[in-house]
Image (cartoon, rainbow, N blue to C red):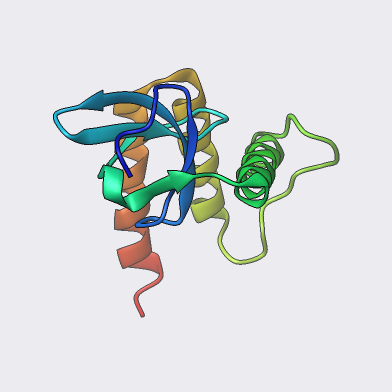
Length: 125
């Protein structure tokens, strides 16, 4: 496939992800999930136009992700309580979700590191 037009919705077969074409630079295509998110690169040969099923799958994934995030932040319907496994894991995760939502990359990175340290100390397998 030749490089698609900016704005086209395509399936990246290499990653099995649907994305919107944001730009074509140096033989690579920059994609982003239709609902937004972090961009990724793909080669034009790995792309094909998304069919109706692909687009529906992407929308369902976006709705599910938003629902999980709302539930984690307590902004969605119903009460949110920590899972029975580990309250510390849950608290670190909630803090990271909040940091990501407000765009605080330093805090999100700090909490990701804290999660790794906590996992190694409290949950060695």
